[in-house]
Image (cartoon, rainbow, N blue to C red; front, side):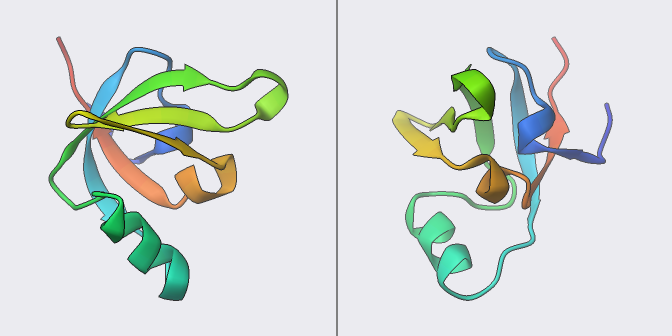
Amino acid sequence: MDSNLNLNSLKEGESAIIRAISAEGALYHRLVGLGFRVGKAIAVVRHGRFKGPLQVRIGNTDIIMRRSDAERIRVIAKTA
């Protein structure tokens, strides 16, 4: 398992555990409010075309997020 990944590096269908959130202020509070927590499982559902937004799933919730925000989320990839 590589522990030096950001959420953007995962491929569609891959899952990971959130290791750290390196956001501050309003962005940090927004992410926490959406359910992003250290230790929670997260999966990439879809990458938008032309470097568009990501669709991720935390629990039963799907979230569309900017790639710049996803870069701030460090993850540990799950292995099958």
